[in-house]
Amino acid sequence: MKKIAISSSIVALLLVLIQTALFSHIPFFHITADLLLIFIAFVAINNGSRLAMILGFVSGLLLDFMSIAPFGLSSFILTFIAFFLGKLHGHYNLTHFIFPFILAIVATATKFFLLLLLHFLFSTSIKTYSIYDSIFLIELALNVVFAPCLFFSLNRFPSFFKS
Image 1 (cartoon, rainbow, N blue to C red):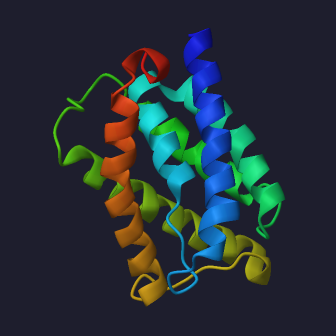
Image 2: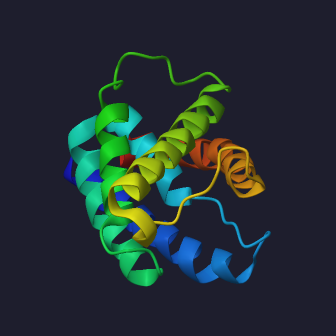
């Protein structure tokens, strides 16, 4: 478990750096894929809630520190998603090709609804978008495209990422 925690932390750090340093300078309508969200979903499904929640909280704080999001926003969203997706650990066959697509849709939709809820509670300090807005649809499409790539890459090393 220690090896899984260390390797997952390293990958989360690399994904935060890729997402904030690289993808932010290659804008696709100023929208980037949320690689960290997909990775936290992968860790939660494969290892359960505990490791994914810790990883989501710490990497979310790092992401908030490196981006312009309110401090703790990404941390809350990633921890929430890690908790609920971690409850599905061991219940589904994850070898199907369609599973990363479904998981990316569920995680992105959950992020969207959490942002709406937080926007309602804290008003203008949380920026959100409409479900019919092209920004949400493009981010959803990018997450759906990147999810199988990330899942396939991480599944190549099961001893590092799966308990």
